[in-house]
Amino acid sequence: MGSIVRNFVLLVSVFLLSTSIAFAAETEYYMQQSGVWTAKDFTFHTGEVFPELRIGYTTLGDPQNDAVLILHGTTGSGTKMLGKDFGGELFLDGQPLDAHKYYIILPDAIGTGASSKPSDGLRANFPQYNYDDMVSAQYRLVTEGLGVKHLRVIVGNSMGGMQTWLWGIRYPAFMDALVPLASMPIEMSGRNWMMRKFISESIRRDPAWQHGNYTEQPTGTQFTSVFYGLATNGGSQALQKQAPTSDSGDALIAKRLSDPFTMDTNDFLYQWESSKDYNPKNLENIRAYVLAINSEDDERNPPSLGVMERELPRIQHASFYLIPASEETIGHSTTGKAKWWKKQFAEFLQGVPVQQE
Image 1 (cartoon, rainbow, N blue to C red):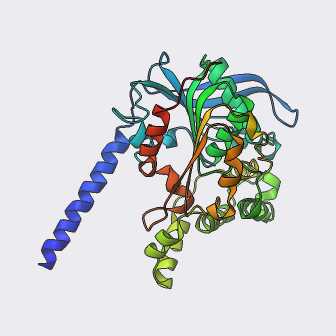
Image 2: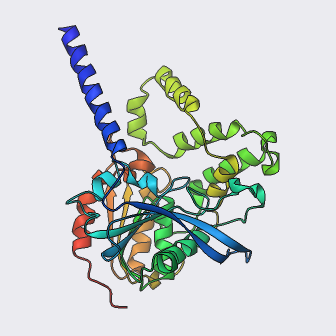
Image 3: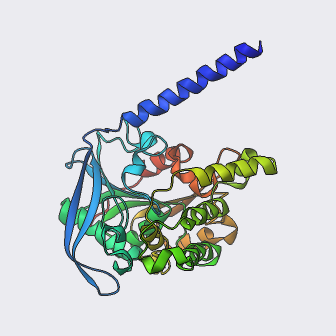
């Protein structure tokens, strides 16, 4: 009997692995294209002008259809939003953002993917960018690079969620709807900022960093990343389930520390420091319909702060969906799995009128 169970488990594991591999190999969505557009004379918030700022991007669907903007999280990229848990739940036939019906734009934020970044050669001499700069670059890509004049909806996760709030404030007539995920419309502060500051200090205090002029990647960066990830992500119930004993906790940490870590340290540092002055003032400027979505166990955006209840009434058309915590949700990363909210999103988008410019 035991051998039968073991064989069954093995077969299920092989099936799930093959299914995952098959989806990964099936990278092409409908009319999927990738490119790099160059923004000439890009002005950063510091006043520094970059002669040529590269902005990487991926698009799905026909440019004649209603346009949708998808914004990724810190250290991510546009293509990372195409995985089975996000794009695989939203962009396929019959799904809420079916690429046959929408023109979906997935840019790489400054400092990520194919976009300009410190590791291109400037290292620590690369301009200090922030979220406002990222939004400016995205806007230029969408309008100048791709010729889009209006967006049906912007969906952003984590860092992308914070940028979604900024888009609504800065370009209030440019979109019909905003769906900020795993974010809050308040100044960067509290534990959310202090843990990010810990990343910055850990790298800058590491002698191996050499003020950004290292010849080998500082090994401490991976340790810092793992620490931050466990401290601000994963969900308390889910991590308790994964590590019910100290030995299993040790094994989880050992695995994460042994996993490949390929990101350049300066790129990593710049990404986290870019959030320091995030402050979405003037929420009253937002004209778009808003559906904000967070998870109950989000370590960086805890609902106990009461932020959403306090701030959303400042927006004319705003609603909030809180994903209940469970052993299956994973804290701040929960919203990266669209299965938890795509039903609410589809119902919301169906009821959003086209905004009159």
